[in-house]
Length: 247
Image (cartoon, rainbow, N blue to C red):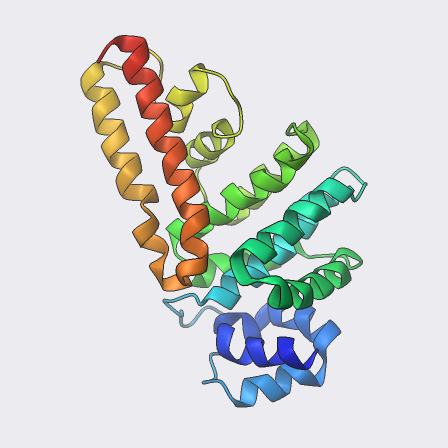
């Protein structure tokens, strides 16, 4: 775990403390304390007297790792294709070596009972809205990894979204990105099928502003890829409506 502990020292900010820090501490023990000494201390204030206004790549990574374990266990079964999806995510984002260490931690988290509300409270206290939207998008990716999104997984992600203060409208928009139905193009843009052409264009501009990959630059280049995929889905939804209406 030495390499992983070294990464923790450089890749984590607020996730060193609170319930997330407690979970990683279970598996890394003194490695966390050792890495923390080489990092500027940023404490998680459970009384919410202060906030940290930035999220590092490692904060996002561990948040995704822990919440993905919640979704994977939602139906009472840990499926290989879901585990493969998480492993591929880490390999694509961080490379084989770092992904291997992250997945070791992930396997440990899977075996533990997770206080989802507390984890989400820490995340929403420190992570901006765009990053939280990206988390929800990744969680749907896990749920869809077996070819379909099951209702029990949808409900788990819905609960997580609520805990993260992601609106129902945003939740339905992201959910619609994982269904190949024309009507979902409207849901992705958060409008009704009866919207006027002007309203469609206005909604598209609003979604571009909300989900633009540049909003996740603070997480590092490795996370821009996932944000770009979500952005592409928004563009495709708009193009689908344009073709349908002959715009």
